Length: 239
Figure 1 (cartoon, rainbow, N blue to C red):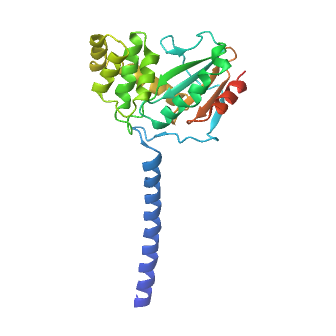
Figure 2 (cartoon, rainbow, N blue to C red):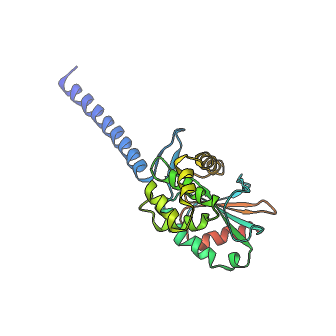
Figure 3 (cartoon, one colour):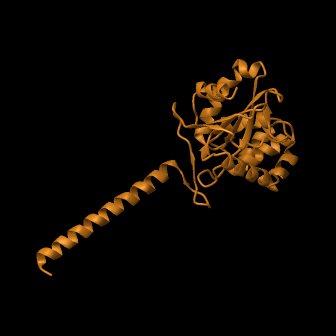
C-alpha cells in the first residue's frame, strides 16, 4: 500500500471514530441531564416543566385503592391521581403551582374533583426519595398524610432519616410508632407496588398526573410540572 493510501485510510478511520465518539458522548450527556436507566433498561426521569408537556387520553389503567390518601370529596366524579417523588424539584413546583391552584378552584371547593397522591420515587437519581415515601405512609397510619406531605415538600432539601423523624414530631405524630414504622421498612412494599402502578399507567417520570372520570372511566394523562390550565383542560376532556 502506498503512503498516500495509508494516509487516506487512517483519515477515514479517524473520522469514523470521531463520529462514533461524538454520538456516544451526546447520548451520555442527555442521560446525565434527563435521567438514568432503571434495572429493566427503562429511562426514569424528572419531567422538565413545559406549557406543552405531553398528554395522553384513552383508557389508562390506574388502580385507585381504599388506602390511597384522598384530598377532597371521596365521592367526587373526577379524580386527579398524581404519581410523585418527594425529592423531585419539579414535583415541588407542581405542589406549589398547579396543585395549589387546583385546591383554590371551584372544582375542588365544590366537590367535583378530588386529588389522590401515589408514590413514584425515582430511587436511581434521588437517594432520599424512597424513605420519604415510606415516611409519608407511616404518617398516614396516624391520620396525617397530607400534613406530612406538605412538610416534606416544604423541607425538600433535608430528607434524611433524622429529618423525617423530626417532621413527624413537629406535626404531632406518635414518635415511637412512627420511628418503628420507618426503621422497620413497613411501607416499602406499598411504595414498590405504587411505583409499578405508575409504570403500568404510562408514567416515565415525575410528576405524572392521570385525570380519571370515575363514572365513564375516561382518562387523560399529563406529564410534568405543567400550569393549572393544562390540568383543567384534562378535567374537561374526561367529562
